[in-house]
Image (cartoon, rainbow over all chains, first blue to last red):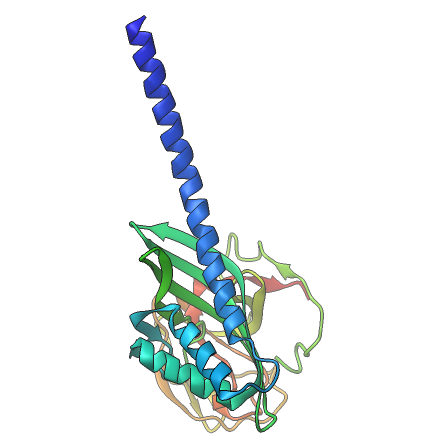
Length: 166
Length: 119
């Protein structure tokens, strides 16, 4: 009778552990998707903005990234390690250059590995119009590495996948 | 890929095309560009280990000029020789009338080739 009780308790604990193991990644995946949605919302610019809004949005964009963050991009050649301040500065310059800007993410493929690390392969589309009227519509595959730091998923590495290498 | 395929055209990808065979030179293939929905149409011109170069608009593979009857527009490209890496194919479009910097071409992993257009 005692043995049965212990077996039953062991079974319940095992069942609960398995359930948590299944739910946990899904919960984390939702949080990661939320970060990408937030990134997209922060980049969005559809009208002129004052300096205060520009700076606020740039700082918020910067807060999505780890310090430093690694960027791998061959065209244009922007590969390197960037501090949060540099990312904020880059965001300010980019937002100033464009009168309209939108960054959209599709087909996120999220893989959790190690504790608090995730690799995400996705499609990104950057649409915009510069202040001089030049339009931009670029689609690229991205491979991002995110790390969970103080309960927030931050971008640690962003790679623009080079599909065709000349 | 003008004039072989025009912008705005509609087609299907035969995904089983290379299930039991390998792409051949001059095959037009569908390349997975981003995610599962963004594809490119490009032509296979070289295989792993081969040397590719452009000289005055002419394509050379391993030092031999390649005859490309499907080309319709003039090309004036110059590209130093480069070798196709292991597991890769060298792909290029048929429309080479623009500056070489504006044309998206090069070597890609064979695994990115997912099939060929049906027509």
